[in-house]
Each structure stands twice: as structure tokens, then as C-alpha cells.
Image 1 (cartoon, rainbow, N blue to C red):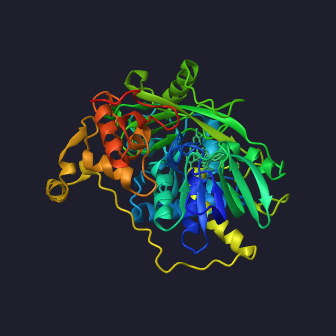
Image 2: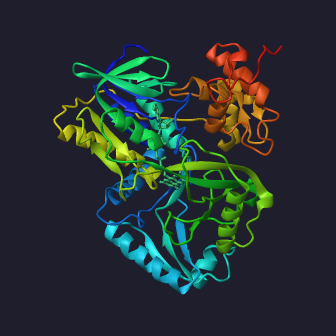
Image 3: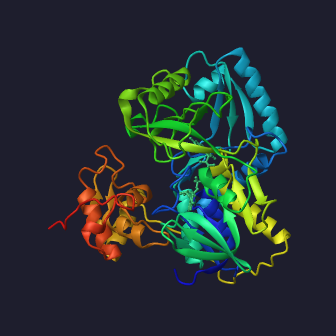
Amino acid sequence: MKNNQFDFAVIGAGVSGAWIAYELSKYTAKTCLIEKENDVAMGATKANSAIIHAGYDPVPGTLMAKLNIRGNELVRKLCKKMDIPFRQIGSLVIALTEEDEAKIRELYERGLQNGVDGLRILNKTETLSLEPNLSPEVRGALFAETAGVCSSFEMSCAPAEVAENNGVELIRNFKVENIRINGEYTVLVSSSGQTVSARTVINAAGVHADEIAKLFGDDSFIITPRKGEYSILDNNCGDLVHHVIFQPPVKFGKGILVSQTVDGNIIVGPTAENIDDKENKATTFEGQLTAFEGARRSVPSVSERDVITSFTGIRPIGGKGDFIIGFSDFNNRLFNVAGIESPGLTAGPAIGEYVVEKIAESGFEFVAKENFDNNRKVIRFKDLSDDEKNKIIAQNPLYGRVICRCETVTEGEIADSVTRGAGARDMDGVKRRVRAGMGRCQGGFCGPRVMEIIARELDIPMSEVTKFGGASRMTEKEMI
Ligand SMILES: Cc1cc2nc3c(=O)[nH]c(=O)nc-3n(C[C@H](O)[C@H](O)[C@H](O)COP(=O)(O)OP(=O)(O)OC[C@H]3O[C@@H](n4cnc5c(N)ncnc54)[C@H](O)[C@@H]3O)c2cc1C
């Protein structure tokens, strides 16, 4: 840590914390972004459906509705500016029964009240002409033009990078476990005894936000973890559907979807199960079965045979029916950003804006930086034309060496993912940023080469390269 006294300490580098840090980095106030893991986006932000919701689902008048609509608008603008993978493919909530038809009409009305553009109710023929692989039972659908799919990881990695490039300090492997007061500063104490002091602490700790609030004497909310299991299908199934396919929402959330991912795979899930252990990210046979049974109601030909990987995400359910965003009523040094359940990913950039607006309203005088820069460009070799590929290889020969053959990822991209702002520090961090190891062989061929590149770029021995930080070393000994 360079100097451990800050105006603002943001706890949690998920999508909420990252966009708050991004907004704060526009001003001269000193800010740090604290994360207990070795990388950004390790909580709910890492494992979700990655849908940018149009905004017809939240109850009108809620903060969720307001920030969903503004978030959708900002995502479409900022993803271009900051080179975050996003495709506006549109979504369909399909009706399979008469009751579903009533539900989609209700969602349509709600969408109009929330101010969603581009909503339409389609009949059976129109629906099937858009998506021929849907169940023949389909009776119609609610089409939302402004919905899309994104890289949920880059939705927090990119703002964290821009924030760091503009002066925010990203502090990894710092698990806030205690606090003490030192005059106008609150001292945050980590599990290993390190300290960081800040005048205002912004609590964006996801499923652990209630524990952070309690340290400040605030027990006004409890976060219940709700598990959601998913499967990803091989990209040769990518034409199964072309939009996000939802069924009408159910008691525990938006139900099971089938969708293209931003990379052209198909995603199936999530399940919804309240659990006790906030870190229980295990996938189960029963969970996968439930996800596929649900998915087959929408798309009968979707098959478990095409699964290449499965994962679980944990929703931070705040129990208030809305996002919990604002200064704590119990301690004015604490600003809570809690209960950020779906559509939290969509709302992320709007949450950042809203938090800064609220802090400014409380009397803090923000001074804008003259040189704030949110331009960001990532080279994705596979997507370049032949001319562009030749040009980039001439500039940097590392782009001429393909390391991950399944996903066509070059050495140049892997090195860049480590050295850029808020960069990768481990194997999983590289995988999430550039997809090396994400293909059919799941890193079997490229793993050792990726280790070498990380060790070289971070100037550490191979034996210190980890899978996901901490004690997760890839090898005990130096490799020759
Ligand atoms: C199954 C599922 C599906 C979803 N689908 C969608 C969707 O399609 N579209 C959408 O818009 N939203 C979706 N969401 C919601 C979205 O993922 C969340 O709203 C969003 O990711 C929450 O972000 P966050 O930053 O608030 O929390 P998190 O991403 O959980 O980040 C909290 C961070 O705080 C860190 N932390 C916790 N405790 C401490 C501590 N003591 N010290 C330091 N750091 C700490 C954690 O490690 C973590 O990185 C879904 C969520 C789930 C789980």
C-alpha cells in the first residue's frame, strides 16, 4: 500500500464496487478499492447469467427499476467506449400457457411504466419465426429490444482498470475483518492484521455486506445467499437460440433461461435455492437436472451432452424487495450498497453514478480531475482481420504466437492481461480475461505456457504462480 489514508474505501471489487470506484476516480478525492480475493469480480459478479436486462421486471418506483433502466442505457454507451464485450441480442419472455400470456402482458405494462423502449408482444408465428427451436407449445412472447448479453467479468474488470489508471488504489487479498476508530478516520483491519484508513467506508461486499455493516453497529439487514447453478454448452450449439429466452418470472427470481453468451456459447440455468453457507459454490447433479428440465420446456432439443462446463453463482438477497443503497442510519461513516441482486449487473454503472450523487448531496465537495480518461482498448486477436493481425504482429511478435489453440489466444494477449491496470495475477485471472483455457480442452495444452508467461510478466518464480491466489500453487517445484 502506498499511503493507507483515504477519503473513500470501497469494500468489494464486484460490479458495484468497481463502478463506484470508477465514478470516484473522476474526482480528486483519494479512493481505494479493497478486495479479499486475488482478483476483481470474485463474488456474484463472476457467476451469473450475464444478461443486460431491459427493465420490465422490477416493480415500478423502486430503486431497482430506476437503476436498471439507467444501467441499461449506460451499458450500451460505456461498453463501446471501454471495449467491454456486449451484444444487444434482445430478449424474449415466452408464454407456454394461458397463465403465462397474462404474465407477459403484465410485464409489458410494467415495462411501459418503467420507461423501457422497444417492447413488443409477439404472437406465436412471430415468436417461432425469430426462434424456430422453441417448443411448439409456445403461444407468444414479450420481446425486449434493449436487452443483451455481456462479459460479466469485464463489467467489473474494465471499470476497476480505468479506476486504477485514474489513481484509485486496488488492494487485493485484504479481507476486512474488524474496524477501529481513529479520529475522523475508520481503520479497516484485515484478517492478516494489515490496516487501511478512510473517512467514508462504502460497503459493497455482496453476500458479506451484512457482516461488514454489523462491524459498524448496523444490523438493519440480513443477506440470505441463494444459489443458482448453470451449464455452458459447446459453441457448436451456438445457433440453438439467438435471443435471451426467459420463461415468466417465478417466486424465487427470473426462472430458467436459455441464451447465447457474448462469446457464442449457450448458457442454461440458473436454479434457485436458498442455502446457509455463503461460499457454497458446488455444482450438483440435482441442480443440473433441474436446470435442463426447466430449459427443455423452452427449447426441447437442448442437451446435457453438449455441456463443456458448469458453475454456481450466489445471489445476495437483501430481503427488502429493493437494493439497499445509502448512508447507514446507525453510523454516518458507512455507506451501504447491499442486497444487490439481479438486475445488479445491469445496474452496475448506474449504481456508481447514484452513490456519488448521494455522497455529494450529503455535503462532500467533489472536485473533478482534469485528466480523467476512460478510453480502454483490448486486442482480441481472433476477431481481427488478416491485415490487422499482420500489423499487430509486426508491432509486437508476441501476437504471432498462439498459446491457447481451442480459443486462439496469443502470447501478446496473455501478457497484456497481466500487465494492464487491475490485471490478472493468477491462472484463473488470465482465463477470465482472455479465455485461455476456456475451450474444449479446458487448459490441458496451454496451461504450462500460461504459467510461464505469468511468471515472466510478474517477475516471480514458476512455483509462485497460483490458480486463484492464496495457497493454490500450480506446482511445488520450479519447472525446467
Ligand atoms: C445466479 C445469478 C444470476 C444473475 N443474473 C444476472 C443477470 O443476468 N443480469 C443482472 O443484471 N444481474 C444478474 N445477477 C445479479 C448480479 O450478478 C449481482 O447483482 C451483482 O454481481 C452484485 O455485485 P456486487 O458487486 O454487489 O457483489 P459481488 O459481485 O458479490 O462482489 C462483492 C465483493 O466483495 C468481496 N468481499 C466480500 N467480503 C469482503 C471482505 N470482508 N473484505 C473484502 N472484500 C470482501 C467479495 O470477494 C466480492 O468480490 C445474477 C446473480 C446471480 C447470483
